[in-house]
Image (cartoon, rainbow, N blue to C red; front, side, top):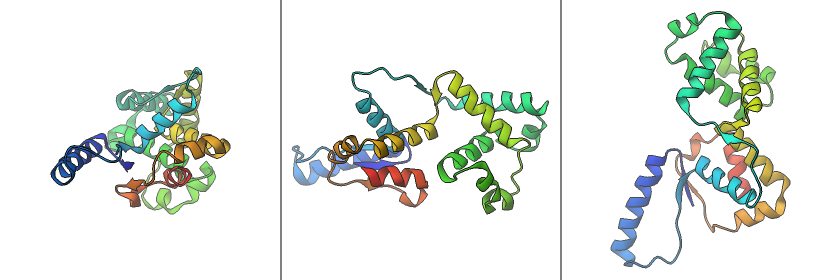
Length: 193
């Protein structure tokens, strides 16, 4: 398994690898090789885990809908959207802060104390409330975003040792493209498989 950050990179690696193997080994491959994003692999894990059972959630991955939701929540809480006039890609910044909070920190309190938040001049008015309302919306509508999916998969692998071993036995080797960019949560998932 080769894990990378984008579908395009995974597809490009797959094409290059197939050409290389054809050139040196002919048409027969001794092993199956997969090139995918970590999120795609997590979807595969979830599908295997829920095989024969009904999932009670949907993956919320539409970036445009997520940004609109963030803007709507911001306006509802703060009464205006002047933040987005002052800050380019303000919705994306808020989504990124929520992501960082969920994948890197234990709580909003420790998150706010970290240098990242303080030293980059990022100040989102009522961020705590925006984050809470975003999570409430997803829960109410049975949605999980990509970060929730990582948390969910990490919990599955942590609490179900036999399932984690089954997933780990699928590959002899796992290669990570741009491994230095992995979050702590992503590293934890890869360590379990």
